Length: 137
Length: 110
Image (cartoon, rainbow over all chains, first blue to last red; front, side, top):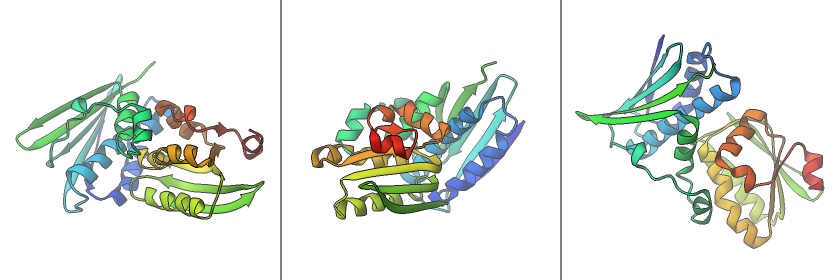
């Protein structure tokens, strides 16, 4: 089963993203707490792209595709903005975030802790971030 | 949707959060905390009973005050988080940095 969404690059679109994910995850074999967490992880990646790669330009779009099989969920997030390779981003220490009063960085910690696998590729101007969550039966 | 309400109880300024905090509205939470500090608040309790969702933008607001609060002797506590929101605090380890209580009474006593 596939679900697709084109998201406008503005932070006010994040609630639309959550509503879409709630529908897309309706039948997924995850607990309510896990659904909440994967929603958060996908939102964190999209919020990063909206703010940092697209400067909140509502004309730009992010494409999200959710694919589910019997064993896993794949969230494929693609855009044409400045490439941000989440795999290369060094996760900051929480104390460092606190001392430096950085408000960023926390989202990426969440994505890396919540998702089982993360893939990133940038090809012909299209960046694709794939977040994978395995079902535990 | 996000709604904030300030009340006073037992010497605490209580900030009740209703709805969802994300990158579009976390500045509202930030401003509400700044107002409490400007008003001389020394005991702040965040009531999370009706907080349905919080992303890193909102969690980052709390994080950004922790060191200042330590230096200024401002006491920040959180109570009544729903299990799914509490799990997010735990994933980040924020439950180790901010005292989180089951309910208001326990927060006042803690």
